[in-house]
Image (cartoon, rainbow, N blue to C red):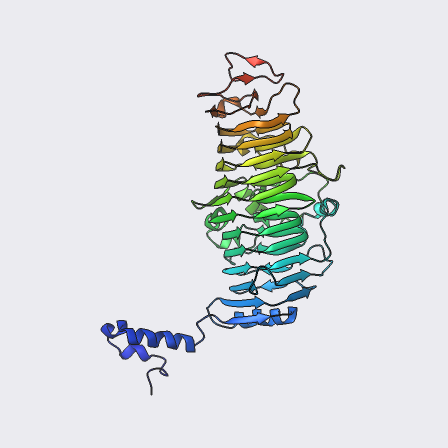
Length: 478
């Protein structure tokens, strides 16, 4: 019997022989003959894509590549249940996948596997379900609307990790990329364009919706976010409600009476992890993105820790829906940090405020603010550094702090910002209790005038102003 055909061919070889170059090549050839290597497929229809995904699932441990050719129209969700690379044909996003379904809750791609990459595609919602009215009408069901890429991490056994979504265009849809249950580990979303997308990137954690939490190392699975990289994305077009959101606070959600039909799968899990942030690995970032005309938040972070938010260009605009049904009306910020967020550095961003109302702000640093929940200092954001940011436009505040600790404000520039405040106060801070704020403003914060209540100013801070815009001398904690 030949060596290659024998299942246990290497048992007769001495250890010294195993490292000969010729034998290494032979081993590689054997691996190829047994289907270990990745395969390359093409697909030009929904049925072909489904078949190629099935082929990839049966092709051994390698990560296969499926290249989409031309345009694929589909009214069904595409379930990705095996490690795979799905990519467009050669050229810049010449391959299209068009969602034709009118089902408001059915995604286009539904990723249910680790080690998945989607790249160089044009993804379109043919029905253009992109209105704030539609979003608000369905908010009472606590479901996100149809996503072009959905990443449900709703079973702790799944290990949804190493997901890359890069160099795609998302067009005319309620939600571009979204997750539910747990936030995927080691997630990269980079160099994508979002055009007329109501919520471009919306990563949500709700442990109450996750099965088998208690059958794994729950703290590691729930609270370890791995590496997060959201960078160099461009978001533009009308009705941009939310640019980028990483919100791990939904398991502590404050539920107003108007919200019904919210599924609570595991109340004990919610109680266990409520207010505990997802901690990302060093080097995790939300950097160098462009968000144009957000009418709620350009970038929003809640109950997450250890992130850089740097080099982004963000602008806000008026909400196009002015009704009581729009629950977030007139509460806008270029960058919003809240609900036990920790160890966040917001550095060298350019923020243009174009919205009106009492909460038209460049940067918010808040405690738990979902749907007007009461202030609780135990849910305050902490160790937040705002440094070298540039504020432009016209609004209420450059910075609004409401429930925080260890907040550092340093070397920011508001010389191109105009406040609607009659006292020309451009930064407002409110805290409880004041003795825990331990915060500081230092360096040169150009054209930032403070209105503060229970804000401990230390270091080389600018002059303080009270809520009426009067200069305060010898300020003490109130």
